[in-house]
Length: 557
Image 1 (spheres, rainbow, N blue to C red):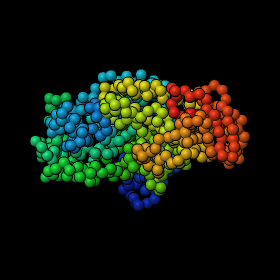
Image 2 (tube, rainbow, N blue to C red):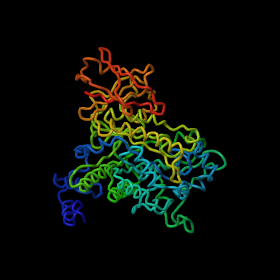
Image 3 (cartoon, one colour):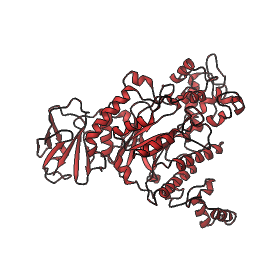
Image 4 (cartoon, rainbow, N blue to C red):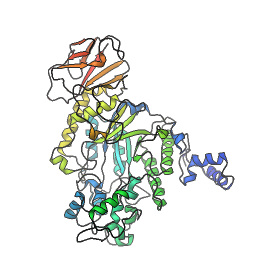
């Protein structure tokens, strides 16, 4: 057993302590160190599974330098190509995904989501080519999806037989991504969304409130391990996939409207606490997550949770990960954990992640946005309607995020067969070409004294505020700096060809040194400028129609 783990001697010692005066401070400390209080064994080390201990964590510099990563948010829910939350919504009568499922695969009383897991073959997946493409796009780290709310582990899992080595692709997807990312020098992360499976997946135990199948329970309600005899899932227990009857829709609901209201107040709530009647779920979640950490040694973890998942189990797993990561790196701290919407008392235990949102200003602690050019799971209609975010939009978002001390993790949705579509290829090509020119002003930079100027673009620093953001214009200026070098970004082309940076007016306090020259990245030659009491005026060159609508200016002194 490795030096960080509990030795046989320490386990005996802890057993004796537990039988003795358990209220003593020493016994309490030992229980905290090893997770005994929760029944979870964790690696011992600097971090205890408490909020106060986890708040010792410091952001590693490698992450601050990286700025941009790509995420493959890929699971069996991409097979129908109907977008997000398919595994839940296919069990909710009246939803577009329910209608699509009935029309395409059959009614969920007969064809449940486990059959979609089976249909996920990843037959066109070429991970080497995708990873090379992500690197050309400018990614410095890569995230793989470890398990979504649909509760199918995308790795070789000992504690959960519903995993992609036995079901669907027949491959260790996380392990494949991890090997390729490390071969190419990328930092590697894993996202884990499975703490919500116990409530999110409960519609699979429901029924249609209306129509020909009214009152008939869906597949999860009745299926047992024995029912799989002679089928593709022989030996697997569907109740382990669907998580058991935790919050089951009661009998007697007779309208879609009432069923939707019940879901909204019951299984649709974003529960973070452990399931009160199913402690086995929490225990199994911990074991699966711990194995995933120990087996793939990620540089980053992402939890789709408000603060940390499942109470003490979440604290246990983060303490284990921080201590394990230090053991992998000779005592150096290189781990990053992303989670959301922290209370002030717990801020700093991990990195703040803002889903589909951005910070309103410079945050003192480094943070991350996770967003997507389309839906998290592949939606065919967005490709057919050419409705993905444009490269210019994402470039503007990236610069705004970096200027405010953040990183961007961008999901490029993958089809169920493992390929990406033509519009996604075009997006990656164009964005990568822009990053090749502008990376100098992005990678390794830090926020300037001010993030920039222009009208407010987002409100608050909370999830989903990008949905309420306004378009950027040439009035929006953002700054980054690298040592003494200052960069100014224009998030639009000025209509008269002259950019006016008000905060760098003559005699300003943020950059009092004289400006010697100004360059535009990607343009050969110096730009004409003048500085007066109102602004720094910069004359732009002839516009390149192929450029994205974000322009970096190098301020030379």
